[in-house]
Length: 111
Image (tube, rainbow, N blue to C red):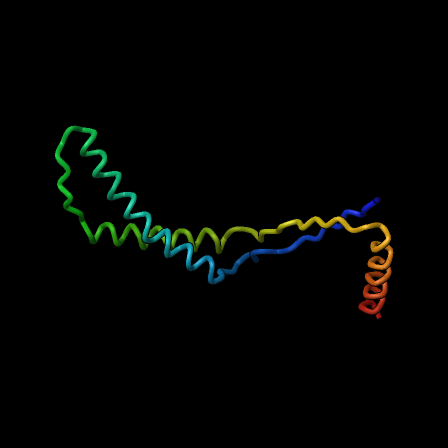
């Protein structure tokens, strides 16, 4: 059976905008960044042969988390629009009817 491949571009993210998913991801970055930094510093102490002290500079870790979250938001705000191409196989018999509908729709928009 012959098919027609229909490609449709969908914009998933617009330029100069931030959506709720970006905010949720930035919160995750803000939390995970200082956690990984603290773990990495403890691992460095163990590798160097020192006993881990588990003394954390909370103010510095909070500032690093805030900076990481804000950086993520700025990156998404400045990034270009993202597009996804959706591919759909349409049987050739259905394709003719779909093309006729799209032509009528285009003609109505022009009028």
